[in-house]
Length: 71
Image (cartoon, rainbow, N blue to C red; front, side, top):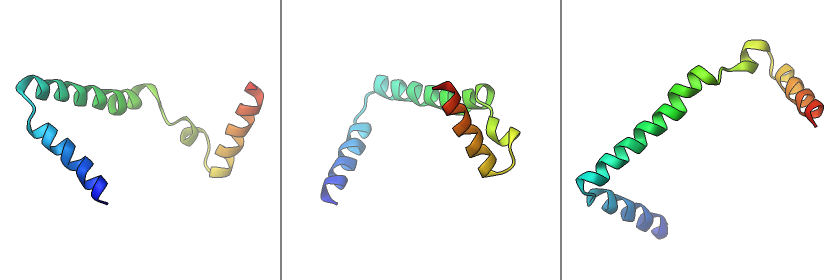
């Protein structure tokens, strides 16, 4: 538990002592991650299985059949 606290404090202290350039870079990184995981997922990765199948069993069978056919 002490090790985890030390690691957390290390990062907190590091972020507190960032200069303006470091803060701008971390803001850019956060915006990029938001765009990649939130916005692109909505437009380019639709929920295919939920739109085609109703039950978990049907989804599982489709995935298994697809994996077997592709190998």
